[in-house]
Image 1 (cartoon, helix red, strand yellow):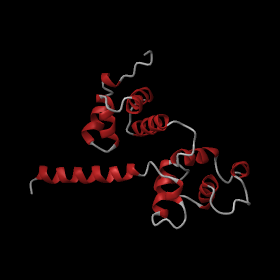
Image 2 (tube, helix red, strand yellow; image 1 turned 180 degrees about the vertical axis):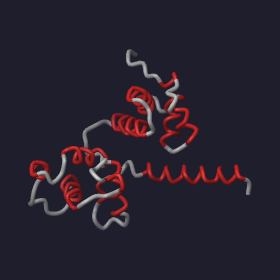
Image 3 (cartoon, one colour; image 1 turned 60 degrees about the vertical axis):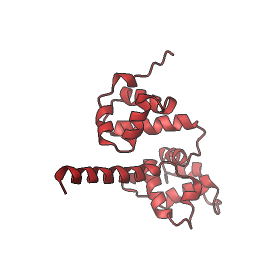
Image 4 (cartoon, helix red, strand yellow; image 1 turned 120 degrees about the horizontal axis):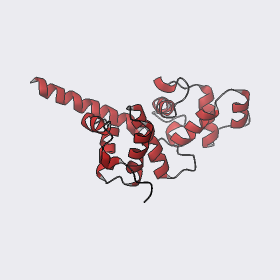
Length: 178
């Protein structure tokens, strides 16, 4: 096997593993209910996507589980409600909001959620705030445009697309006046 063939296969493997990672972006209450075969993996993905404190490695704790149970309406919720948990300092409001967003329990439109998700991921890739915002807007509002397709490829882990998107191409500049 030649060097380029080996690199090509490695690149495909990385792209596939990143696609699996991004597939966790749309979790639902059903995915994080005790008894689900993938409960722990889904909660770890929730911790990462919701940007929980110490969640970068997929860490979650019993308080996070309690928040999920209360938001999803599972089990006995007679102990503390979420506002009390925030007030006492058990959990941060930002963590609760992050969990709501990942579980799609916030009242935002799908396009708004898609745009924010893309903006965060593009920022993580090193784009400027303005560039990430422009490009994320294309991804949410015009997904079939040249820029929208480029973003989709970059979010799926395509290295060439990531490299190109980092240049913030002119065709990805959103005209807010239209």
